[in-house]
Length: 621
Image 1 (tube, rainbow, N blue to C red):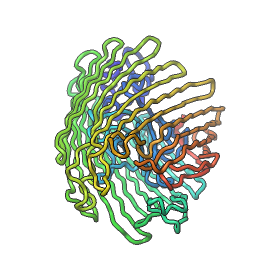
Image 2 (cartoon, rainbow, N blue to C red):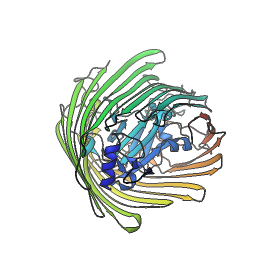
Image 3 (cartoon, rainbow, N blue to C red):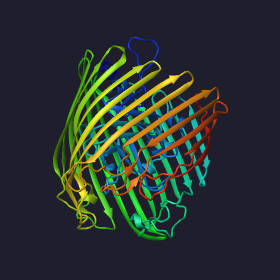
Image 4 (tube, helix red, strand yellow):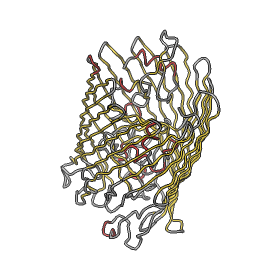
């Protein structure tokens, strides 16, 4: 990474800034730079200069691909695999590079998001129409973010207003099969100093039958007497804004609230309602020209109310408060030192008692980034002190070398950990294991990539070992009894071939149980060993056409590998018509060949679906 560019970005951008910056070094006009990410190092760097394996999804990508959910959008990307319990709005778990679903840290506008009780992020409850951009960083990041970043970090940035001036409304209306409809309304604006964005949306689908008939023997909570359609709905609100002073200081704030409801086939409950809320604020300023200081605070609320038909069964409510202070100091030419402190406090409340309901964590970290000729170096270390499991230290080292012609070689090693959840420790009352230790990991990676005008490719190979893996014993008691070894190779290739835009991905994964017990050598559950994806798009003036081909190999639903889920391939077709500058009509045919497949044993996935969208954006270019 070129630290001269990084230093200029630090002076120009607040933490969590958008996808591009501008270099004004002696020029009288602005020159667009390569896309910039902040998640990999907690500082703005060019995507091409990252020493980590990263993927960036822009708002333009979202509108081109026309996804219905985050799972639609990210499935098939390198290292990404989802398990879904029966269609839109149903529980969705993400596995990044073969690690557990609790081993991926999700951030929304810099705020940590996941249930305090189970440790799972509700990807199904985040509306894609409220997303401006997604950054995916693969590989361990505990040395910068603390617990849970074993597989990597995913950061979602919500919609933001521009500084172009004026008032800009937006509207998107969608209708589709399975009684699906969706509406999204936005209003944004800004000036040279300030910006704002307001959004409101709603989505409803009549759904599919979440469990296929005959599922009683699956012990999945499904009944043969419930072959009905299971609806889901979501309503969401968002607000964000910011102001930048002439001296470069900037204050920003974001808020997202999502209200969800879903019906499903269950034994003790068959309907839930949920509230997901994320709020955060950031203030950055420059005490000195070479020093940027950033203060941020945020909160994540998560509540599930459970029902059996119309009868209230119970609830789980969790709250996570967090604050951080980060300092980025340019210590010399092409050298950057980052020092920071994070704090978070967690609280849980439920109709089912927990032996403890609160805990807090404080983490201090340091990172050094430097460029020496064609060599790049990044060192980071962190110590976390948790009120439940004490101290934990992590670190990472990454090196890169730039050859002539755009070829880059990278190598990295890092450690990470996952803290036991409240469910692991205390749920239900008196049945957890308060003596659990954090799960720990060690990862090594080699990468080779090349950026060229009109095309690019990358190849990464890695190995991760996880110790103290938390698992249930024969009496369903959580213990630190397991180990895992995960090996993988990821490749991607992108090119512009005339008027065609091509992007392709291929992942090979070997997530193995390595505990020496009866399941030793078995594949970790719900991870596909091989995945592939191809996105192909073309514009014909006002018309656009495209297709996405997704393929996944077989997987197993359980640790014993007794329940095998077959591989599958799906094809999504899409088209768009720019009616005029402001109006666009979109159409998407998902799973065009109506393939049947499962990512969780006995839970159905949607078949062929048609979605039509009318989009209004008077400020579109």
